[in-house]
Length: 423
Picture 1 (cartoon, rainbow, N blue to C red):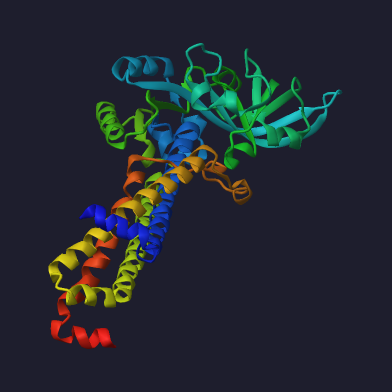
Picture 2: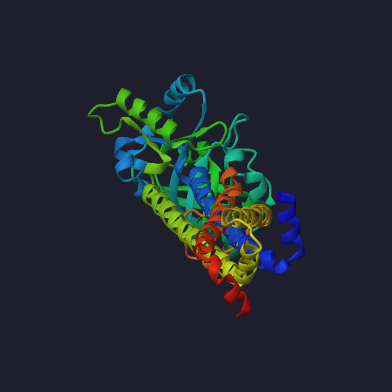
């Protein structure tokens, strides 16, 4: 029976071509839309985790209350001891200290006078330790445009955009003008060892990256860091696990001391909870609406097909074929159309999504003044859900359309068939 129906669909393209193309288009677009939204969410989490929040961040309580202002005068002291405790108690995570700072980068001429200067947003991390995870976390080897990574104290990386703005080259001296942890003016000389481009507009406009030991010396922050960030070793953020770790840590370190350490998860930083919830809600609504529209289109396609085959059904009834058999055969045909169309649409959608996952689309021209940590290249992400997010609705929509439109078979009166055929 199935073989007979399949041959009929192949030989009569008018019965199968348009419905299959409709299913293919709808399923393909659903898969691409889902994968694109999923990729955007993943990029947002990864960029914020790597450059700002970590999967988990530890700060002093006072610092955490004003963290957006980077109050280094409220930074946590006793970093070495805390890192040792974290490595012993939470070995499933990588921990690394960071200091964020702002200031003015001054470029002197040959006479020592100011040639050019610009404000910088600095990040001090562990660059010189042999065991540092920061090179991989920040993807520094891929981000390096010119020069080399810092190999000794006193060397610094600046963004390629900033280096062109200041007119500096590799090996030039740059002076950082900032304020110490205690509020006094500080000047410190660096040698520019290389330039970087992270592919994140918020970072690339005026980033300065140096080893944390240099900034601790320059800003009088010995054994002090603004924050200690932690990452799961498989580089996958798990909010439930992170929340449990943070709750246990904060419970253990509860008290009235404003400089006690507090732990905050990625989701509870930089407004990410609202951003992620909003993006998830919007994506669910968009995908839901798209699936509903696709189902309606396929349903209408089934209705039109049934109307076009009105005469064929009459002939089959006239020669004595059972109404139930005709109805079941139409259901079987719709399932075949839905299966082949959904499979082909899913294959094409996943293929296009994978291409966008590898290459992405450059949207840097839209992010020139963006302050959000989001990559300039938006990429899709193929997940297991991508393989059935469009397949199931595509299959069910054709089934639903034929099931409802096929009910008309039972409303045909045998006594009226001859008159209908004559007409």
